[in-house]
Length: 305
Image (cartoon, rainbow, N blue to C red):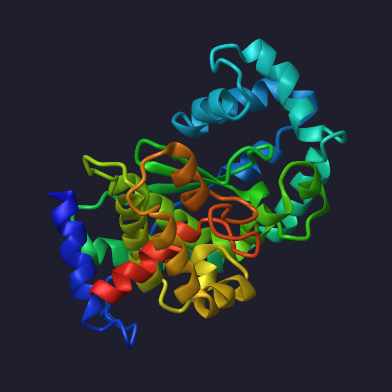
């Protein structure tokens, strides 16, 4: 059923694709709750850490255990060890956590625009999928581990993964090509696209490159319509010059892909090259951006609809 609805929604949206104005202007907004778990964690005092931890478990009974286990890697029941480790995590200078926490608090002091942008995305999702469950959003500190985290009926945003492409400590934890999407303004598209991939999973029985390209292309195409004020390269998480390179060389790219007969291949190395993030798409060219196969799938969807 989800697959059918997905196809119908994409087809319906196509009717106004050129104007990119399919959604009614008077949609009832989805006022999503954005929980500042980041503030709560960063307000822990080393002198009162035991009491502060008890308060956190009481005030955030769902997210606190998840954060302790999945981010800190500590059993949520081991509060004694947590009392020892949490101050180290918050005040670390070797890996830059202390400076990072301070920058996060400065950059995310006001999240009004961010919340409005995320609300817009889920308002439009709710219009397309009335049965969709609208999650609660938690801002949190991830220790440079994850930008988007899913739990039951919640989405976590690792705010420390969105401090700006030029943030110095990212040089120690990520590759240069990954920094493009580590900006605060990338969060709404990341959240919505991740939500769509999670709630509209691939259900095909074959794992050919072409099938994966079209599936992922549909999700990115739908994301681009939901955020119709964003240029395509931002939706893809690319720089403008990367998108422009693909447009200029699209015909040559297709000739190469067809000559190599890659579309019907199922080998994991081929799929990984075309679909996974990287400095470039190795099956095509070192001048190409990573995840070129997703862009090609997006182009297929646009041409077919």
